[in-house]
Image (cartoon, rainbow, N blue to C red; front, side):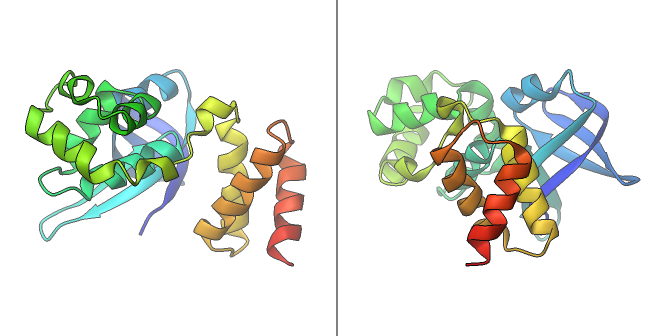
Length: 193
């Protein structure tokens, strides 16, 4: 499975981009919020969810890990597929979605295009106990590029992505202004304990 891509933007539309990664063009579906964050950048990094069906293999890209995690929670709900989940994330930020779920604000979810009352109620019911675990580092002011680069460096060195993400996240929560070099160095020392 593909978990992360970094490359040059060949073509960009609000819901899809073509990303050139070492000469291979990947068609990646994105949310409008991701598009807004990457639209002025030439080279980007995206967290990827690979969605496999019997008739298609689709890539969904996210600027933040929190957005990817929320997408994966949304598609775990019966009746919500990747397109609906992407449309939800295009109409509401991860922080707002978390808040709406935790406060059971069904009307806020219904205001998102493509979400009816039944779907909104199902989202609240099924995700209320799960959304507290998504760490939205936006609210903590952490630079995503540093986080992404550190995780990529560690996975390139052969470390498990989930473990690398946890170590990097823990170190960033201790010191959000840490440099990339120090973050990688401290992460390696944590991973080698």
